Image 1 (cartoon, rainbow, N blue to C red):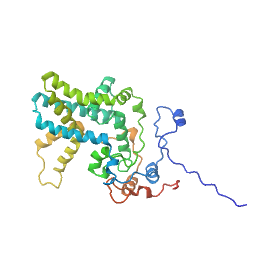
Image 2: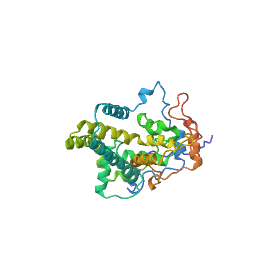
Image 3: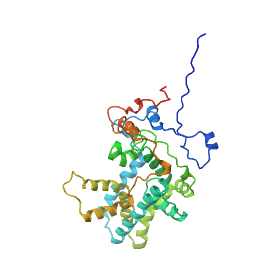
Image 4: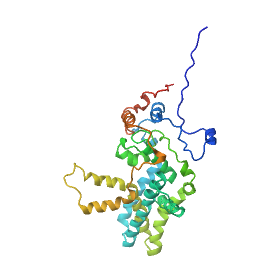
Length: 329
C-alpha cells in the first residue's frame, strides 16, 4: 500500500478577525493582536497589487472625488484673487480660521486621535472634530487609520503614502489615484468606541460643507458684508493653504540645503515657521501603531518593490521569497 504524506498546514495571517473571534475577544484588546511578525513579508509575497499607473489606465485609476476637490480648489481660488478685492477684516479672519482648522488636524486628528498623545475633555473633542472637518481631509477615523498604518509600515508598500515612492505620491498621488494595494492592518477600535469620532464620521459630509465652506463664507458676509471675500479667501484660499502648506515648507527647506548657496534670513525662517505651525507633523510613536519591522526587514521590503509611477514592468512584490512556514499556491 502506497503511503501518503499529509501536507503541512499553512497558517496565513487574516486581514480581519473572523466574526466568531470578534465575539470572543475583549473589546479592549486590539483587533490586530494576532498578526504575526512576518505579516509584511507575507502580504507583499502573496497578495497581488494593482498594475502600475500608465497613460493607458490613467483615467480608470483616478479617484474622481479627490481629483475634483483638489483641482477645483486652486482654480476657484485663483479666479477669486483676480476678481474679488481682499478686505483687511477678511484677510485677518482667513488667517485665524486657517490656524483653527489646521490645529483641528494637528492637535486633534494627529496628536489626540491618531497618536493618543494626550487626553481631552469632551467639549474640546467636539471643537477639534469640527475644526478638523473644516480642513476637509477626511473623517477622524479614516485619517487616523491611514496615519497609524503609515507609522507601522513606514518604508514598505503597506504604507498608504510611503515617501519611498517620491514626493508627488506621498503628498497628493495617494489621494488622487487608487491605492496599489490595501494599506496594512491598523487597529482603530479605540476610535470606534469614541462617541465624538462616531458622530463626526456619521455626519462628516454635512460637517465638511458647514465648517469648510459655509462658516468661513457666512461670517465675513454677515458681519461686514464681504460674501465673495469670505468664499474665495476664508473658504477656498484658506483651504488651499491647509492642504498644501507642507509642500510649501518642503520647498523652503530646500533653500536651507547645500544645493542653494544662500541660506534663508531670520525673518524668512520666522514667517515660514508661522505658516507651517498648524500643519507641523511628527513621528512620535504610539502604543497603537508600534512598528513590527526591523531595519533589515524595511530595507528588504523597500528594495524589492517598485513605485506606483512605474510604466514598464509591474512590481516585483509578488516575486519575493515566501516567508518561512508558508508556500505559494
